[in-house]
Image (tube, rainbow, N blue to C red; front, side, top):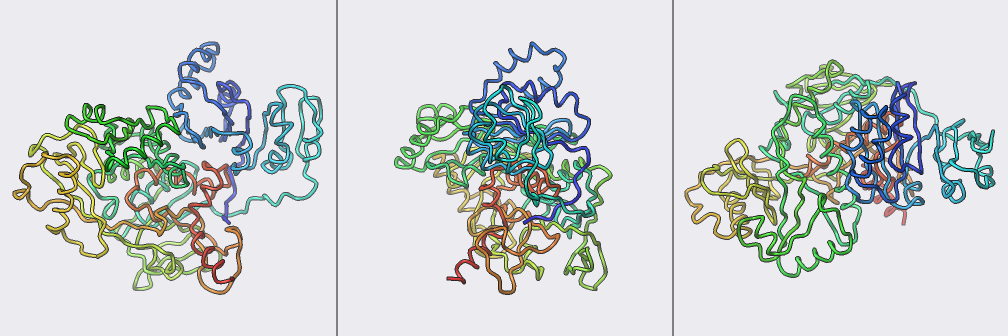
Length: 564
C-alpha cells in the first residue's frame, strides 16, 4: 500500500514485448519531450557488438544508440533499469520468460507494442497492466479474440484501445510533492537525489554537522553481489542492486567521489565450500563480467599468493568512499534540496494532511505531507516506528598504514576483507559485535587482523606493533538481513491481514532502513524503488522482490501468527 502523488502530466509508459535491438525505443526517446518509461521484454539479449552493427543503420539515432550501448547490462535474469538524460528517460529491460516478466511487472501502461506470442497467450496479463484508454499496436495480424475478451477494442487490424468493463481502481492520489528526509547518510542522500530528479522539493534534516557521520562514514565500502545455489530472493535482490549501483555511480555527475572498480576476489572458505561454489558457476553460467569462478591456480595468479580453494572474481566490483558518494548525491539535487544540519528531531505528529517534526523543546523544525526515515537505528526512537524489528550491530574497521605491507591491488574478502590503499590506509574489517561500545578496542582489531592473516597467510609477519587505528560504526540490521523499503506499517491495534496490501500503513510515512553493511549497493536501487512508488511509476524490480523489501513483511507475519 503506497500513497502516491500527482504524476507529471508529461509522463508516458510503454511496454514492448519485441524489443530486439531497441529501434522502437530509440525512436521514442528521440521524439519524447517529457518523461518516458519504457518497459522492454528481452528473452535473449543481443551482445553489445551486435547492437553496434545494427545501430549503424540508423545514423539519425546516433546519440541515443551510443548511450544505450554504453549502459547495456550483463545478460543475467531479472529487471535492469537504465536511466538516460538525467533520469528523464527510463528503460527497464525485463530478462526472462515472457509469462514471468509480465506477471512480475508493476506498472500502468499507456501504450503496448506487442508480438503475436504476447497477443495470443498474455492478453489478461496485458490488461492487468493497462491504463484506461491505453493503446495497443500489433506487429503483425493475428487472432485477436483473447485481446478483445480482455478489454481491448480494435479500431483496425493492428490497433486497439483498452476499455475496461469496470473501473480499474488505479487512480493516482493527489498530494504535494514535498518530502522531509531524516538522515544524510547513503540512504537519505540517494532518495534526495532520486526525488529531486523527479521535481520534488526536499528538506533534509541531519542531527550531525555534516553528511555520512554514522554507518555511512567508513573510509571505504565494498561493492559486490551475493550468489547462491538456488538464486534465492537475497541473491536476486543483491544482483539487481549491485548492477544498478554500478550504473548509478558511473553516471553520477561532479563532484566525483573516491573509489575504484579494481575488482573483488571472494575466496572460498575451504574445499567443501569451493565445490559448492563451482556447482553454482556451472549451473548459472554467469557472464564473466558479472561473476567468474576461478580455480586455485587462476585465483593465485591474480592474487600473487596462494589461494588453495579458488574464489569468485567480481571484475566490475571494488570499493567506494561512502561519504564522498553522499556529498555527490546531495550536490546533484541542486536548488530542490534544503539541507539543515544539527537538527535533532525527537517527535513527529500528524496535523491535518501533514507531519510536524519537533525537537526536544517542542520547537517545530519542519512539516510536510511525506516523511522518509533514512536514519538507520535512529528510526525506532520514534513512537510510530518503535516496533520495527531493527537491531543495532557494532562494526569496527581497522586501518593499516599502506606502506606497512604489500597488498593485492584488488579487494580480497572471505570471513573478512582487505582493501587496496584508501587515503594512505588499507581498510580491514569488519567485526559484527552485539554491544554498544563506541570506542576502538584492541580485541576487535586483533579479530580483524587475524581474519586477514588466515585469508592471506604470511601477509603480516608481526602485527603487535600496529597502532590501534580505525573506526566504529553501528549497522542497522533487519532479522532477514534485507532492507526495509516503502510505506511503514502501523504496528499497534488489532487487525487482520493475509496479504501485504491489507496491512494498515501510516499515511505519508516511508522507510529506507536496514542496509546493514551493504549500503553502497542497496542505496541507489532502494531510492529508485521508493521514488517510483511515490510517483506512481513502473517499479524497477519484480513484484516478489518488492514484497521482500516491504517494511510491513514482519507485521504481516505477526498478524498471521496471531490469527492461528
